[in-house]
View 1: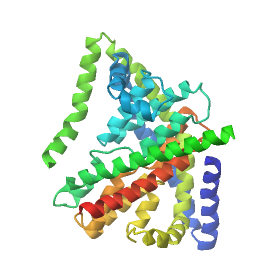
View 2: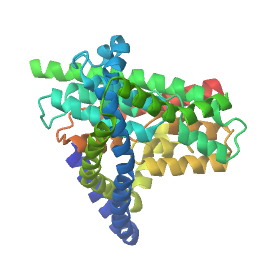
View 3: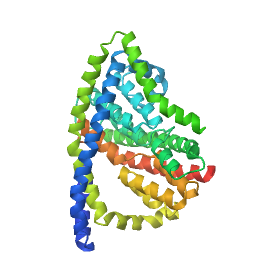
View 4: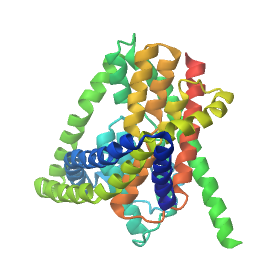
Length: 197
Length: 176
């Protein structure tokens, strides 16, 4: 799936450049894209190191287990395949919390860590498990309370009340989170029916 | 409202860190050693996702720079407009799952051009705030832990984005 998308993006782009005469831009884009990606990763090192360090303390102190106990009823319904007090649950929840407060920088390390735990639960296979797909769906449409970046932009342009989008954003993300979970369920049932039939 | 929100976002991280450290000490966790151990893992992860991101970002950059992205956006735009997505918002809605930076740039553009308190400006802001860059999340999360077979993840993620976009439009129309 990724292979196809990756190749399609690249090849279609190159063919378009031939027809459109945008070869120069494409040449530039290749190297700019590559260096942008590396810059992004280097920038991630600091937050990854810091947050995974702090979260390791939280994990060893048993905070993540506490957190997952607190939200157990809801999250168990969403992730039925994850054992009740497994650390994966704690990381999933911390990731959701970070997203809730618009802390994208803190959310990424926690999300990666959650994926790692889920992979372990799946026997270390290089295949996405049901819980992983669910986690991804929930993550891309995660409930947001404080969209920090957007508020900052609105402040820049002198909005009369930069935060008046907080309510609508929360409402919209709640809808999309519910939608994501339903879509994920539907795909899961389709998959399991296919396997049986 | 404004003050409360900015105070929460200002205080949240330091308080959280302080709390975790105190709680860890209370539970007799070797805090500094644990921090370092966890941090080492962070370095490994950061380096392991570089190839995934380079591959994906180069492909997306080529696609965008060649003009292919604009072409496909023009193709889809009539359909989006038919279901009530304003023409100005359509490019943002399409690019949001693919490129976070491009989407952020477009959001700033729209807010600058139409004003932060205009319908378009608000819609752009809510859209930006309420969806995530599915391709980035997919590449980074699955790349970091070495997932090769993604199953339905991309389909589910993109459909969830679609729901998010529709939800954002409906909510903004209703609220403002």
